[in-house]
Length: 65
Image 1 (tube, helix red, strand yellow):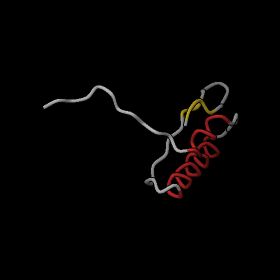
Image 2 (image 1 turned 90 degrees about the vertical axis):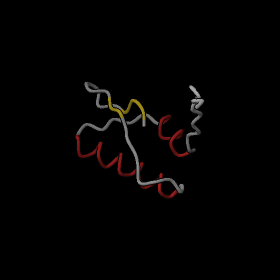
Image 3 (image 1 turned 90 degrees about the horizontal axis):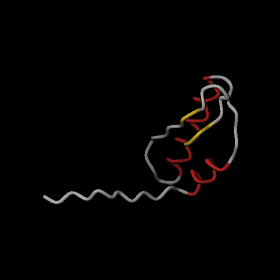
Image 4 (image 1 turned 135 degrees about the vertical axis):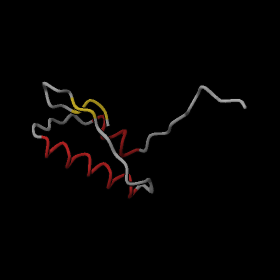
């Protein structure tokens, strides 16, 4: 069995745009709403019901989606 060490990933356009927009979400509820919004966009783009985001702890800023 031959396993490749490379896994190419193509990000959808909406996710590239989301990562280029600065946003500060100061409450956990706002962060969760944002992740749910990403999930809805992913489903609209014919993806699955999946989304995640990483937030900078002290600034409450989105680091990556």
